[in-house]
Amino acid sequence: MKRHFLLIAASALLTTGAHGRSLEFWTMQLSPQLDGYMQGLIARYEAAHPGTRVKWVDLPWAEMERKVLTAIAAGQAPDVVNLNPQFAAKLAEFGALAEPEQYLTPDQVASYLPAAWAGNRLAGKTFALPWYVTVNLTLHRPSLLRDAGVTAVPRSHAELLAAAPRLAAKGRHAYFPALDGSHPLETLVAMGAPLLDARGCPGFNNADGAAAFGFYRDLYQQRLVPRNVVTEGHRKAVELFVAGEVAMISTGMQFLNFIKTSNAGLYADIDIAPPLARPGVPPNLAVMNLAVPQASGHKQAAFEFAAFVSNADNQLAFARAVPVLPSARASYADPFLSTTPASRDLTDRARALSAALVQHGQVLVPPMRAYSKLRNSFAIQLQSQMLGKQSLPSALQTVTAQWANLLGCKP
Image 1 (tube, rainbow, N blue to C red):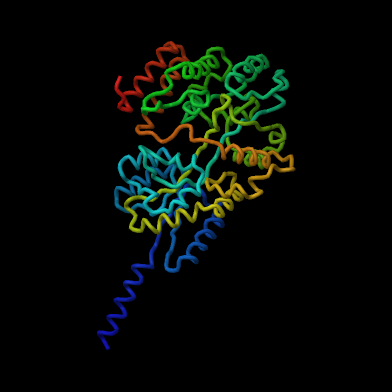
Image 2 (cartoon, one colour; image 1 turned 90 degrees about the vertical axis):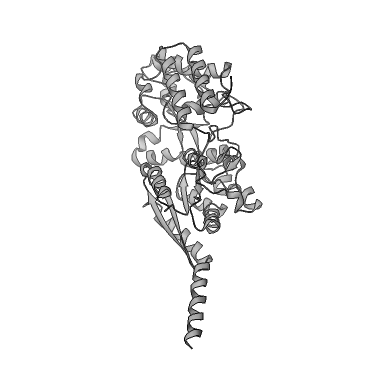
């Protein structure tokens, strides 16, 4: 009898080991706004996977990278973690993330927008699943443009540069070209200059790259933008737009929700247009992802959960809850995203325009090795020629040489 009891107990332990598992899922700053969505999502997954429990941990944006690095170093990494592609790529360089194609079916891989999937690849390998995406629009103040005699909203950087003197004559600025983050690199590509050539070496030391550098230089040296553009970033751009000192900004539709609830008068004086770009250049996608660390003890289950979180139905529900867009292709068949609204409400129109842009967008600044150093090198040389500390050709040549060295390109 005792032996029979031990066999039953051992069998129970084996069953628990095989089917009773706990997955830890880290996200960035979704609580408390999305507590109901996330708890419902996890409950549905657990109901469909008896014996599996998901522990959700939500962290502030500012703490995520440090916490992830600390957890991986301590051997206590989460099973699934929400990251941005550039930081995830840094982890992938050191082999810290599992490759999705080893755990997902071809049909699952094909269910995502190809551009969003490609935005999570480095050196020919995928390091995460795409989750939600955003795309910038041009938000503008029609009253300010009309007052300056600008009859058509600029659609390219060249058109913006041509309109800027008219706004300057009225004591306002057309634009605030943020220099923080990836904004300058996105502008470079939007103006037609590739970041990298076919060899993976600097691809912008050409006429298009010179035009992008010249765009920033002319705006600054002709006093067509605020002087603090060289020290402030996107946050300042938004602040000046709200204050009526800047007529146009590049930002996502999520900003409109904040304005709608906090400043009804301003909301009524905003309209939208596609992002600034050279004709033929696709809109830029910003992709958030779901990564599975190599240290996870349940990688197959972790990828199953990540695929569940990012499937078409769950991403569509997420997009209904917050102003972001899905990376799942099938989500866009739903009228919520596929139908141009009859409503004249700005938020509805912004969602429809953003959804249309996402479906032919690209990640203009893909994950790159030594990204932080590349970005900083570019920003420093761009600012240097804006301030007149060196000529445009010299700055362009310097950053090209620095990038070539960082990327290991031979002269």
